[in-house]
Length: 188
Image (cartoon, rainbow, N blue to C red):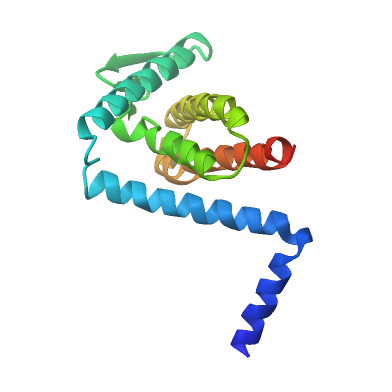
């Protein structure tokens, strides 16, 4: 009975009208595999064999994210804060430290690898991947700015905002970029 069920599912998914379902499943599989392979590479293999390169990339991205989100906080949102190292200290005494884990390198790599693996014309990948990387980076800046607002107004919600809502925002943006690729660019 179980074999008949899986055979039925397999035959349904082969139908053209379920192409979008297959695409979403592939997106999920590729994204999860990249996520866990990255974690293995970062936390068990320490970015072997390009540890120095990855450390440099993370340092650079962390600096950019810190400087750019600080600029938005000060110049657009008029948030008063003191800066010590890579930490923004707000008037309510709450600090927001931008560490290497805030660099966005994992999400940038996830997006780039997903697009490299996913079918489509290379002439479009040559502009879409860099554009997507910029969008993912801007999403990271927005994430830090929104976390700053939470730190000022609802500091008790910082952990929840950081770990769930704002982290999920990254993957939602990557998903929407993938949908644009799949529906608008690749299918042309």
